[in-house]
Image 1 (cartoon, helix red, strand yellow):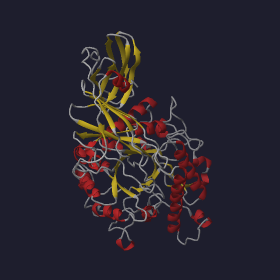
Image 2 (image 1 turned 45 degrees about the horizontal axis):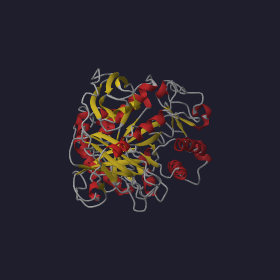
Image 3 (image 1 turned 45 degrees about the vertical axis):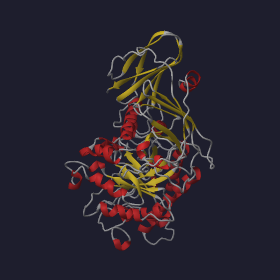
Image 4 (image 1 turned 180 degrees about the vertical axis):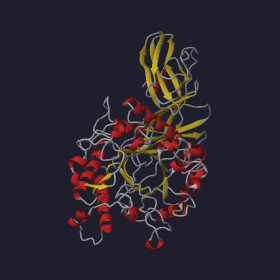
Length: 610
């Protein structure tokens, strides 16, 4: 990276302003927008529902597609993605336990060519945007109805005695201790090898009832009843044992990795048994998943019931179910509840007439935000959400997510805030370009270091930065995993500060920043020539002239200030130079070309099309 700050300190006059800690009032929220809220989307790979969009995508196309997906969700206010990494006892990452997924390459057991690790790539790109990555695994489903190939090392071939046929499905038997051990090994392999923020299960436990189809686990029940009288209670206990084992294993290995499950929206029908006044598919009775118990026992860090119903729906009314879930959180184990929202149902031709209105999901968001123990929402799924059905995305961006939110904290996992960053601030008044650079603070008292940083842009004023400044989500301009922030900003009297965030989003005090203002004369205006072509689809040529030899950096940034390419950096010869920017891996959009030299800085916008 071109060392701007040392040059400034030796060549320019400095105006030193300490931007410090506590006193100017400001609103804590914009309207009803909370500063902390979980905003996530499910990204499914089974049947190529979301990513990759086709089995024939090359690794380069897969990467470009995922980057575009992340960028679009980030622009829409999403702060986490829940990505399916294991759909049918297979993997979209290199595993010594299970074969490669057919949905990645077209043939189960065949890895991508040229070889790469999709999971490591996706985690890295997600964290670069200051977003959480939750690894979504389907534990028990072994073969789907659409599976075209079964690898020789697939569990159905290696351990056919573990498998229960159920129509066209093949299901790992939850009643076998060997199956629980195997699945724990699979999950912990991911936890130990990858920097995931959470492990996530959906609602695939025992298969949903099908008329005339029997899930035959009589032998397992007879062999290991554990003193339980009924098969239904035994099945629920099987799932309880597995959930608790995974919970304990994650906490022992990496205590700050979260564990979440997304069960059906209804736990149990009937108020007489503690459930809801509903007649819908129910977790407790239909798939033998006692999801309320997991929440109340604290075995999960969050529960995300799939409340894919509309407000006023007869069999299952959203406006009854969501408050019920909020009420299930106990003071002894105050875990999070996130509500799964059915963005895929929003359509002018939806079978439920309530989803034919673009106001249904917004009304659901308003209701969930009124619940004291509901901390956010997850959208199913990525592709239909990005399609902006009936203007849903427009509504989110303009109203509900018009300011960013940080992921809610989990004090039962970690309640020690990181130490504040240290560093300086530079503002180039010549081209309205802001650069902030800082250094991590020392480890906190629990040994944890910063994971992300939040950058705040505050109205000008005198006095120190206040708690109200930091509680206003409108003041957050970026969450980044870098120790710098760059952006093109309008001229004006702004103040900036930076806070550190740890793995569970505990936030530090604001950094004390030094403002450095340049006093140099203007440099020649024609140093950076217009890029050709502009707009462009694959590559563009950039020319610049240096009147004398010296240090220079030609770099490309996106509109969030993230560095995406360095085209030249370091000592450069005098004279005219040309460079080609190959933008194959970048999504379409507007980018900023930035030339920085000892004599000055220049910028221009370029448009990448696809």
